[in-house]
Amino acid sequence: TVGVTQTGDNNSAQYNINGSHNSYTSTVTGDNNQTQLTVGTANTASSYNSITESISGSNNLIIQNVTGGNVTSNVSINGSTNQVTTDLRSARGNATIAITGGNNVINAEQTDVAGANGHVLINTVNGNYNSITTQQQGTNDTTINLSTTGDHNTVTVRQSNTTIVNPKT
Image 1: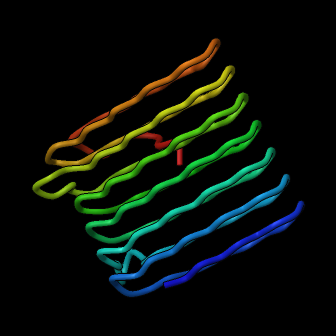
Image 2 (image 1 turned 90 degrees about the horizontal axis):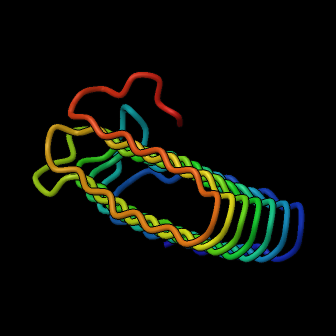
């Protein structure tokens, strides 16, 4: 289990986790912060991991690169002009992204075979002028549950059972 708390402005954190049955929690309060998380690699997948990242503030960046099976990722943001980029290469990946605020950017990609239960993405955005790009690729079930409240939000959804050409992440 890894638990990280960042309080203040202009902080940066980068973590690499290898292995299975891990729990990672990051709580960031402040502006202009960055977290980058890498779990597993193309050669060494990590399974049954749980990721939770929470941000309160503006102009923050979350980057997740996760390779493994049965992964659960939860991101919550309260603030504006934040960016979330997730790349989940997993069999049976579940991701939840919830944002309250405006001018945020979400790039969420889930790829790999998806397994018997498929990929699941729950994306809830409450605010104006947000940009949401969601891509899922898998040979089995893929599910996107997307909800936006606000004005001038841009949403792009791409699903395929074959490789996505020109992925966003």
